[in-house]
Amino acid sequence: MRRKASLILLAFAVFFTALSPLMRWYAFPRLAKIPPSQYQTAVLEAKNPTLLDYGTMKAKKVSKVTVVQTLKGNVEEAEKISDSAGRDVVVWDALSYIVGPDGKMVSKVPERYIFDAHSQDPVHATGEMVDGDQVRRDGIEFKWPFLTEKRDYEYFDAQARITRPIHYKGTTTFRGVKVYYFEQTIPWTKVPMPKTMPLPGVTPESVAKTGTTRWYTTVRKFWVEPTTGAPVYGEEIQKNELRGGTLLGGRDKVTVFAGHVKMREDYIRSTVDLVKDNRVLVLLLTSYLPWGFLILGVLLLALALWLEARGRRPGEPERTEVGEPEPVRV
Image 1: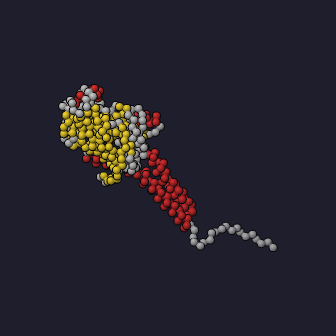
Image 2: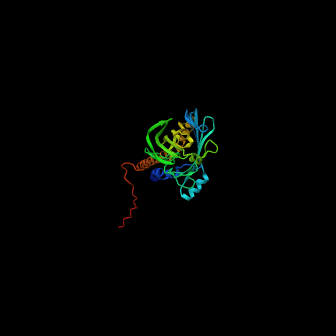
Image 3: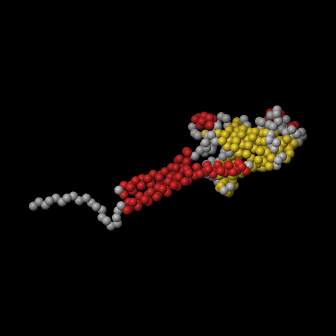
């Protein structure tokens, strides 16, 4: 009976030991993915920035500028692209809505970001755009891959429509969460005018006729939780200028916006809580279950060997079946 039990335990030991690497290297890459229906909002503020008054075409200090960023999963489009691409795809319809201290719109920029649900690599498909302009992203945006590494990544800048490295700068702790700090600098670059302007009748085409161009630079900072690849906090030190042309009345340039944009405190707290919850789910597939199965397999193996040893008493000869002796015939 003990021998039978030890064989059963040995079979389970082999099963759980083999399941450990399968969970980490086979199941995790297939099960961990961004849900197509995700919806997320973040509010950022710039305190005491410089902002252009389009009525007078003069820049002035204001109390604050607010940026509301929304990411909404487009399930219908994701299913269409997934079918044609042959893999799980997520489509995020994003919107950056900027308002001044009086609550009036300064600008709004829509985006459509299409990426692989598992790896977060960009997927190029019809509809990929920024502010109505077709683009081709060659780097990540908004989110890093699961199990983010301590290295530089290619990051897409939506304003300049270009991809540049975002550099790993070190590991630190933010609100009790271990994070990797990344930083990207976009030097002064000529960028398109927003399609939606705060003044009625003013369009990118009408501004272009004056010969005036828009330029932009930023220092982008992210604190990323490496297990989920989700930023828990972000900042930008950004400047925008109009340069040349007749629109400026003889001036070489005028500041459109200059300020330090930071995530608002209440959204920091909610983002950190969300990332902590998602981190447990990823660790379940990458660490808790694989290591748990491995330890369980070792324990079951040890128990099987112990039962096998108990089944044999030390010094006791093994029994052999001896048939009845034949009668001696004389």
